[in-house]
Length: 315
Image 1 (spheres, one colour):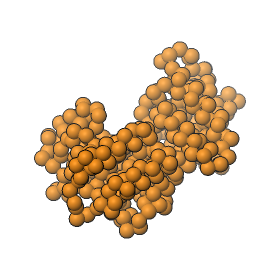
Image 2 (cartoon, rainbow, N blue to C red):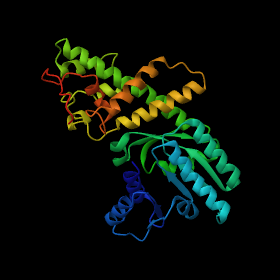
Image 3 (cartoon, helix red, strand yellow):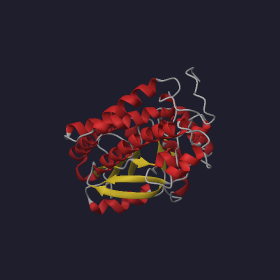
Image 4 (cartoon, one colour):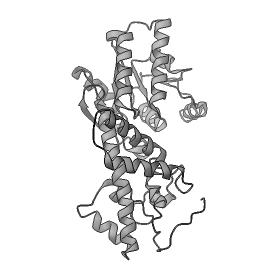
């Protein structure tokens, strides 16, 4: 996700702006520099703290809560050891990762206690996947307590996306994202089961999907990311052996985070418990491992278009 987002930033930033990048994967930053011919307005930082020290706006995109915590701990520790220089404009730390609200709010509190008014931590997880990142069509869900900072954050995020939704104070962005992905996880599993039902009952897969997508069962997993190969005219990960798209391990992670947050706040999530078990098992299945989350259709042993069942052998 970070790579195409950085490309869109570079393409749309003002000519006198500088883009500073960092990734633990050095081949990724090297490839980025090669593609931009080592442009003078792009620099590779040694670590996250160096990016923060030299930037007015810092964007982070990381897989897990522990990674986000470690990144900002390094920034905070670097500032304590050698204070960052004063700036005319307070620095914005915008985290676009999907993490839990408790961790996000804890990091925000640590940033405030360390930097005071010179830096603010916002959460802005995104929806749209790799395809959305490539096309700069992402939707960002913004958690920002100070309304005066919303336009500035929106301006930056709009360089990488088509829509920025301010959901409320800091922590609201990740809360909204987890609620959305909780629903998406359940809808994806239900779509896989419903398609399997209809096909086994003798319905043509395309006709079945077309009916669902003009009826009350219509949803994103049925209309855009249908789990049955050959059903959608414009194609889906299912038509590419479930390659690309949103990984099943990431969906398992997001559903787990949503469940954990729900349990801590006393929210009923009976459907989520069974869905999480399904994703945990499907993630380990050779037919689904490393694939798009719609590959859970394989885990439930859904029939392929010709009516035969997929092999249980590893791909």
